[in-house]
Image (cartoon, rainbow, N blue to C red; front, side, top):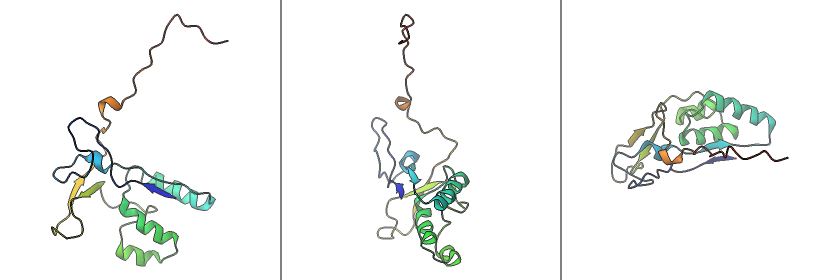
Length: 139
């Protein structure tokens, strides 16, 4: 199973949560992407891929990964697609917005997602639990 989402979320007050075209917030491109399998050999490959590309994969790696797993020749796949999850990614994390199929414009808008930035929204941080100092431990 390969699990992902089509967009991230931004919960800041007064901000669009997704699908912004002009100067979208990079958090819109931060999405979950994980895999699971009961096949031990495949799990080892996926674990190695996760270590190789930690926090640096995109949706563009899914198609070549699936073609690789279906047995297509790697050279043929590489001639048409970006690297699979099993290979080092060539690009810095980024996402596209607006129309990507050339219907209304010919160029694709790319928004970088710098991995050196902390994208946690302030209210998302867990609050420290208040401890009652007179409270005793349960027996």
